[in-house]
Image (cartoon, rainbow, N blue to C red; front, side, top):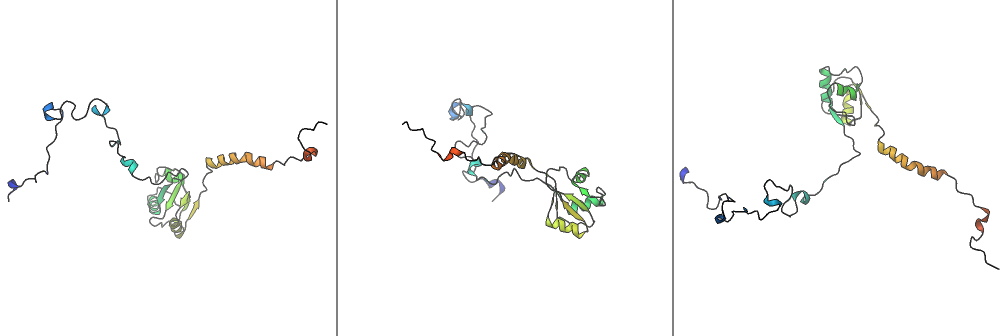
Length: 194
């Protein structure tokens, strides 16, 4: 067997079908596109359309949901904090705040606050004032002799809206019931003619 004697198995390759090259080819004139309509034009591709069969984005199951009340924290590890202190971007003798971390360029966005993770080791005593921290992060900071203060989240608008809705109902409930009148026991129907 030589290289020049090797060939593909019969039927393994197929010649390219050239359309629009005369009626004798069988695919001339309309080039197998039918007559008129959107799909006969050039540059048309109906995105996600699979010829009428159920498209892939509808065949696959839905998964999860968007938690509109969830908080998005900017996360920072203890190792990143230690690196910033070593590089003198942060003064460990003063309390480290979320704004201070952003001003130092350690985080890019404040979002809903900063959350400290327990990645790495902290060797310097530092006081942190952040929105959240993991158990391992709190343990790591306290082991180094520092403290973490978890800031209370700001009251969200949904809580205010709920208070407004229930305010009127509470006021109505406080009003005393109307005292019964003297004629309450008598029949309120029309008088009989004598």
